[in-house]
Image 1 (cartoon, rainbow over the protein chains, first blue to last red):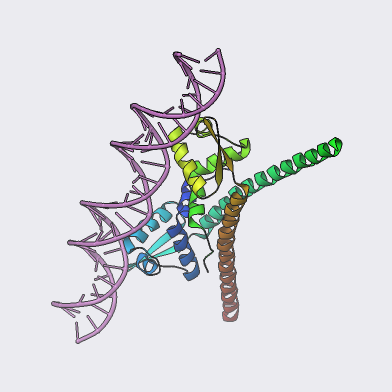
Image 2: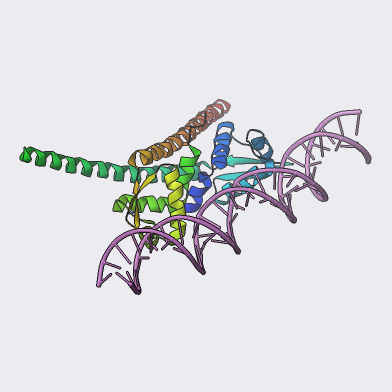
Length: 118
Length: 118
DNA sequence: CCCATTCGCAACTGATGGTTGCGGGTGTCG
DNA sequence: CGACACCCGCAACCATCAGTTGCGAATGGG
């Protein structure tokens, strides 16, 4: 029962640089390719490409004002991404719990066995 | 205040194929490159490469038995990965909440203003 | 012993994150 | 108005990686 995941959305936030860009955009409200690149270890063009990716999956939207292009996070879409992270995490978590429960059961069984043998 | 994330660990679970592999390994307990590739849309070699990646970040461990190499999920490490997903999600979520709170405050301010004007 | 199975290694392709270089629109200031 | 600074987009290029095919080596069952 694998969780339904929008692979495009996931892989968009899968990139470390894109995650940091989203962080920056969230904390500063908005930003341009140039302004973001100043706070990142990559060039403006690299940032611009990432912005294209983020825009394609709807995580950010741009508004052109004069010679500047301001990008802003789409809160609803980011909320969707967060929900997916939570879903996958929860799925794995529940499986891990189940495994531990089974392991405990087996362990109890073994304990009982060694009781009998003694 | 960006969340501390082990980029290697994150990007390991960032790949859709690797996520499905982890799902399979979790639900079936263990598996080989060959057995996994039968349930995935990729070749054995591709799976083998992914297993190398997962092994490098400690998400799986292998035990060679005869000509078979059984892989198994490292629960503790996967738990760490799940925790990171939760952390990042929580960080973004709290930022989104704060933004919405501020937006509401501003809105209330506007309402008050229009009250005065009226 | 032979054959099937499983694995590992190597070479090739395609996509993508990153770079540099350049040219075109848009302000701003003298 | 003209020159300069700034921000952007486009193109070429490089490195890495996911994926493929092909092959040879080791192990195990008839």
